[in-house]
Image (cartoon, one colour):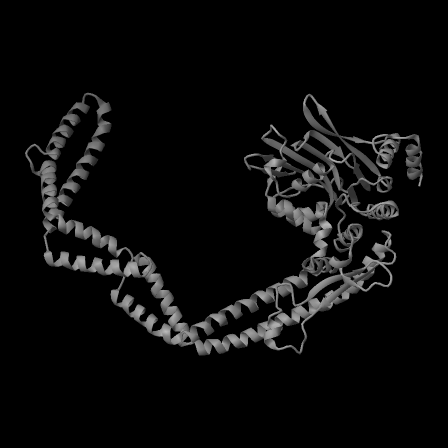
Length: 569
């Protein structure tokens, strides 16, 4: 249950604090007063998408914070634990916890999410959403006109999540085998073209005996052979300067060491330099011997240089042909050998795959038929629940049907496989008739705007029924309805509020009169800026607000009397 909502620098809102109660919470106010902003902010708080345009003009940061009281359950506890969120129950005798969710948003896109003062991810927030808030916005009934959503709604109602996972796993295995078989079949069809090409490329790369890094080593050797004279001169002059000359570096270093040793007898602080000088001497001696040995080995060889040039030319040709480097050429060799092996053994592998594919298809169909049976069983219950629900919102003559179509068992194997999906082999569509004597027809073709609003209320509350109470939000559920129908919708909302907290934005007095907590949203201009505020109404305030909803800006005594009568009922 949502207990408190704090909004800062969002749209027209500077600072807004809203407290909600159990039962039916209604938001009313003039059109454009900011009611939907509050719903939009709540949607962002529970993981909805955020656009920088939602920030109040002139600000670059905003925040939304909500205090929720949630009943604990193993799934919720597991989510919180996996996210590193630690919460405690309000009371040892109670089974609920308080969650404080805060979302800090900025124009730069650097947004932060905190759950009970601990940094959290948007993925965790979205996973928690089903335990917190279920929002149905304006025009959402249009999604019900899309048959693709009907299967999801039926499975939600039937709690088919486990069967759906089994079917999805079976489909994934069948589809993987199918793709592998198609690849082999395609390779077999191209066998005669591929075999010669693959064998030639493999033989060419095998003869080349490629080694990773070989081109770099050869380039280095070519540079040495092309510059033997210069390298010899450099080595000899450096060797003489360090070791061989009478005035060599090592001779000077030995003299310095001798003098510093004598000096340290009189000043002990110089002793610490002796070890460093000894190290330097050893390094210089090692360097001089390396220079001498390297110079002795240097020998210009036109034959070896020619061999290197030829090898580098061959490597360059192979690199251009097979991907630009020795590594990619070796990878091409490995993949070509695998593909050649697959083609040469394709007949045997194809037979194995056909057997495995048939077994995978049969297993998939077994799972899909179990899911079909569960859907058929649930479809009847859903029809009854929906027809009872629509009778409660002034559509007593309405009829509702769930049509579940399955592929025929006598269909050809190819036709059956064409119906395989990760959701099973069923196609689900809702049919509806609002008036006596009219045939049931697809929902999208027969429901008017007002009927769609009521169907949305019934369908969403029935198919999304939760094992755990949460906050259900309806943003202008009253679109396209009025009079007796509005009253029926109000009664339905009131009943729903017995098991869930309900937050509803409405313009209908017939709905507003059922509020357990009536909040009015106002918009005003102060010092050249537009501000939004919210007020919790007492009995007299509700009379005035309902009277305004009945008559408009000019509230009459007659409207007030009518408002009092509505509240008395």
